[in-house]
Image (cartoon, rainbow, N blue to C red; front, side, top):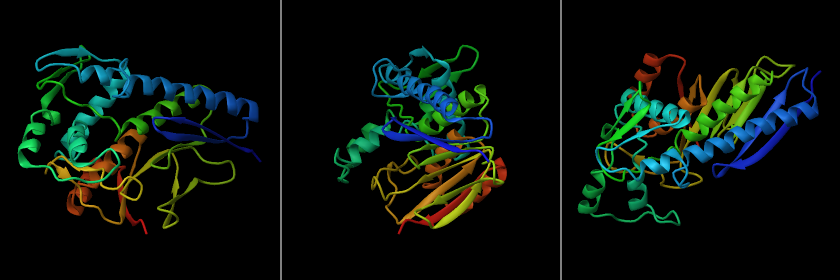
Length: 285
């Protein structure tokens, strides 16, 4: 019977945890492998944080309309996925919505009133239609000046996917990777079970996960922090948490945010269209 090893590290403003349960992995090797995965997460934070001047995402915010920029692989992957999810969700997911957050929510998280003229000004730099990607050159071209790109709604999931690749390179295929409980990626299964057992929404539901990811979005922790890109206003606070299950953590991360904006019929149609994607809604009480 294999032992279970847990390791954690702070990154991307949350705590990442890696749980390894594999018969041929001992304590020392689990620690070594987890450390390599955490180093990859730290590297990705340097490349993807909009608050670090050395990152690709920060540099994008310095561009003027019409300018182009050659992206590194991590930024390219995330922007490509963001553009695709924006299209698939009919604009319910948008990584350029950051300016609205700064308008509607104070630094302490309190909501505030915003007049129409200020919102209209913000509109001029918001929208995934305002940037284009060139796959051959791996470049982005922006069509508005000083846009804000924020990967907070998929960056942690992407980091889990890349960390999972690091584990695989070290021969570890049975593990759970957790980004602050908002996104969880399950690889393989524990030695004595058919899948990993996970608890959602403070015990409201238990699910079994194997080679799949689940992400949740809600208001219990951060309050009114989710913006509706379609309406240019915050999503109304409710005591429900929306979950998305998908083959990758980056996709589940993005979709859990989009599902907060979409109506049930839209969500159902998207899940059927994409396949391997599911949605859950649970009470946060």
